Image 1 (cartoon, rainbow, N blue to C red):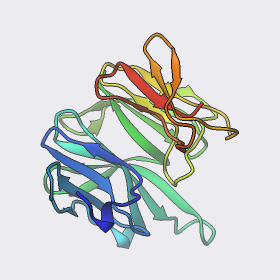
Image 2: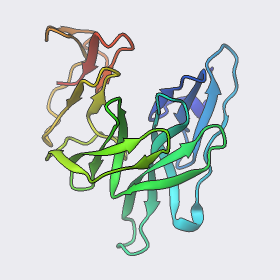
Image 3: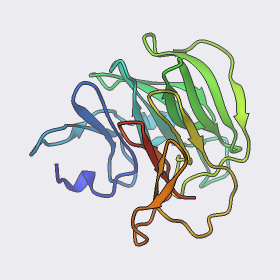
Length: 215
């Protein structure tokens, strides 16, 4: 699956349909969809709504039922100073790719199997809100989980991950400091992977027994 559009992408999610949904390696663009098999070629999945100021779709997260993909919309805010951008959470239908915004002033959505949506606001607050993956709609009021979230170096991202069993890990604080990629077992033991590997994001292994991150 080597393709110039897939090199250096910022976010990807593997769906139950056997396709990987990827943030295209462009200076702004929609999401790509590529079948998880050797030699597969990516195709465009979402299309920017440029009339609304959208210039990038990032950080996809496929819903477990395979009906849709959560992602972050980055857009030029018409009512803000020149050069300022805004973020919102959207969901795109599979396979059509048609999308709609579901949460404004939000980024880096992650679905929890408890039936909730996790996301981070523009003021770095981690929120949780009830979400029905079948209707792909928010079904309740949001609740604050934590403040002072640490945002990623790339736009629209945050140090946040949730496993299929519902375990949540996240990082707070603005300081970057020295970072090291490590494996962390479920009993809390950390082991360095390689000191030469840079890392800015948290994630779980598919087995849900270990996680990786940047302490």
